[in-house]
Amino acid sequence: MIFGYARTSTKKQSLDMQLDELNRFGVDEIITEQASGAKKDRVELNNLLGKLRKGDVLVVYKLDRLGRTMHQLVNLLNDFQEKGIEFVSIKDGINTSTTMGRFLFNIFGAMAEMEREVINERVVSGVESAKARGRLGGRKKAHTKEQIKGMLAMLEHGRSKKEVQEMFVVSRTTLYRYIKENEESI
Image 1 (cartoon, rainbow, N blue to C red):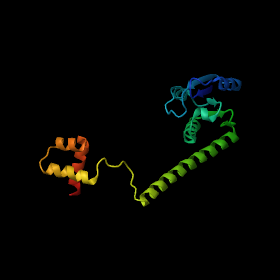
Image 2: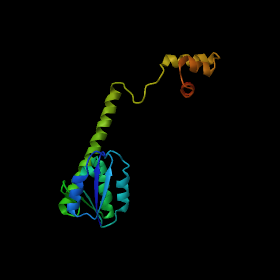
Image 3: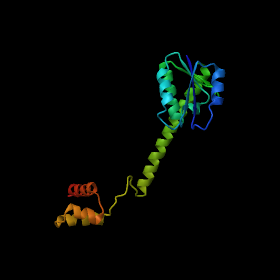
Image 4: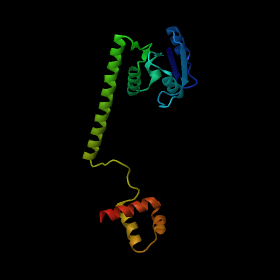
């Protein structure tokens, strides 16, 4: 079976051009969807992926209709390859039933892997750079060390937790965390 998948990001956009190309290609069934490619949970695409069987062909007008990122596309295409499903992108000239199509698919896979590694390297470099400048990750504390010491001192002098919460505008959970952190440092 040859399935076609056409997608627009909004209901205002037209599917006509994609549908014309898919019909010209000779697909048996066309699945349409109007949802952003950034959405991970596209109902119609998920239904289509559940229908595909070994020997089927999935045809799209362009790669970006199927997935937004190279990583997303490569994962889908790897699944297709493992399940014996062929893939065709009309405008991109990719047809995994041909030698050249599989070659292009492997190049895209290598590019996606490189993209992930470059992103990881940037993140690691950024964290190291921030640490070298004395910055630590995470959210800043809502209260200064002096304020926390003041809260703890009030508690030691018999003030209730409720009074401390109101005076320092601190939640019960946060106050208990400060108490626990202080006990651990003793």
